[in-house]
Length: 164
Figure (cartoon, rainbow, N blue to C red):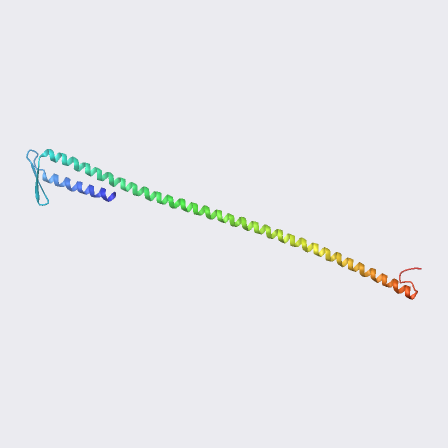
């Protein structure tokens, strides 16, 4: 549209210049030499031609302005679209970072619960081992006492630490 507007403005300017040069007197027919030929027009025809030329000029000017405004609007819309796309990309990136952070927190919680459970199981195992050790020691002492009693009965003497 801009190019068409520029062309129409230039055509109107050239035609206006030719008409101005061609008009010498308004009472006689006006002979205008155009492209190697002569054109004879009455002054009224020149007036109408001038009005048409001015109309073409303003139409070309209008197209030129509309084209530049449209181009400006397209550039503004493209910038706005690019800005919105960047905002969407940043929002998506922030959302994904939040998801990753939430997953990491969840994994950390699971790892902490797992470690707590392992520690609890270790404590239980250590308690059982200690209980088994105590039970083994108690059983060993009882076995020693029983063995000592058995020896005393066979020897006839009371075991050490006992009275008869």
